[in-house]
Length: 320
Image 1 (cartoon, rainbow, N blue to C red):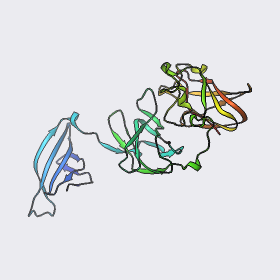
Image 2: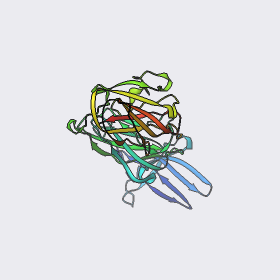
Image 3: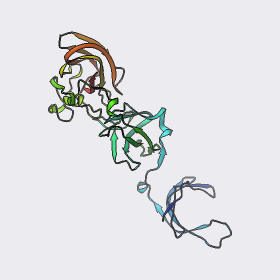
Image 4: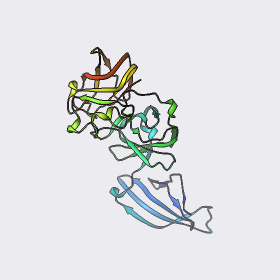
């Protein structure tokens, strides 16, 4: 059985300093250190080393070098760092927990390409990344965990890499999804009979039921979104309810791009009587915001009033 040495070894060698990554010890008492970083003056070298236990030594635990190798820097595995070192304010948190989706949110002090691995056991099995057409490293993180089972325990770990290739990760945490009786009925959900009746455009000309199509705003998942095709302030989307309903609250979440475009700053709402409500201001694009409507209608149209231009659209629109 292989046992892992969980501490990092530190050696002083003359006037130099050597730092070793955690090592493994096998049943034959042979110690393998994967990387030793030695620095002395201008010398900056990496080694791997195999050591074996020296029996009958005067010291209780004595190992001697059996073999070693010089490592090229480009062959080294990345180092791991605690995510807390680059986390601003609060640690990563699971919010907006529904029956089938949840959102992880945190702010990093440096740009990270971030993901969260999750599953019903600490073996995980699924991964979520920040939803962004441009990709790349960012500081405000909001990956959406999807395809969850209702009323179930989930485990997750956050991890990210910076521009220098350093890998950061967090301890394993857990949360529980909502049960069916905790979920409000959303009148603008496809599953409740809502349909798209008009849309300014879909990104790349896709159909409403394709990726970035208008259905992405009303499919009940924060892991999808509707994106217009560079409509900017001219973007709009219209949804027909299965039947007329009295809507107390409209919940709206704008999408965005990492270059700062596609953010909807404010929007207007038009109901089937022709009444125009708004404009309603969206503080940011990191989550959904609630707006009081208090109207009875069989349709909802959202028109962008002001934006940062580009592929404007919505991650989600809901009505309760």
